[in-house]
Image (cartoon, rainbow, N blue to C red; front, side, top):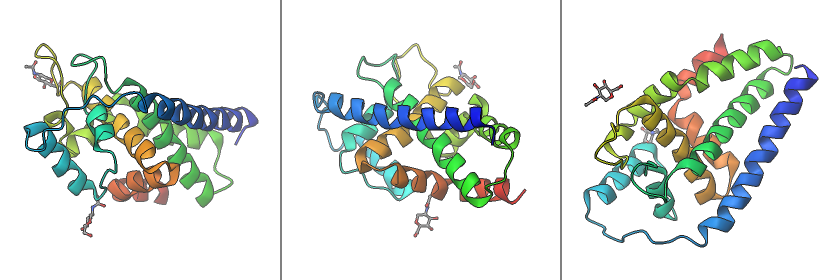
Length: 186
Ligand SMILES: *[C@@H]1O[C@H](CO)[C@@H](O)[C@H](O)[C@H]1NC(C)=O
Ligand SMILES: *[C@@H]1O[C@H](CO)[C@@H](O)[C@H](O)[C@H]1NC(C)=O
């Protein structure tokens, strides 16, 4: 890895950790989530948790992750940025752990493949996030940017909920074991 790449990775990691901290401070101040256990949204959140084998301590975080900016000011933007950092860090960690001599070019290539909006939206569709995410009536919940944002925010939410980058990385790898496994075998 070129030292520039290592530097960007470390910068990304510290930014991620810093955002976790900032967000935790912020999230203490927000808790205006409606407690309606039988609303379609709550039911969808329950189903999603069982699909991915992770139960949220604070399900409001998952609700936030599944709320698009068009729907509410209390939306998933910050979680999405956090999640994107978590996904990238856990991928880099796995790849470098497996092969310390992997070239920076190769590493960057794999990351950019995984981070493309189309690929990220396809991952989100597999979890049927377009059926869960709340958007305004004028917004198409299947638009790639919307689904991708929700997918990334989902991992941001797991990170905050578990207070652990490892747990979020583990959930990420658990969901896409096949895909990641194949990519790493190449
Ligand atoms: C919503 O977006 C999806 C994906 O881009 C597209 O296939 C679909 O036609 C759009 N629906 C509407 C009503 O625009
Ligand atoms: C969730 O757990 C079930 C049963 O242990 C397993 O079959 C399934 O593959 C797991 N799903 C994920 C996404 O980890």
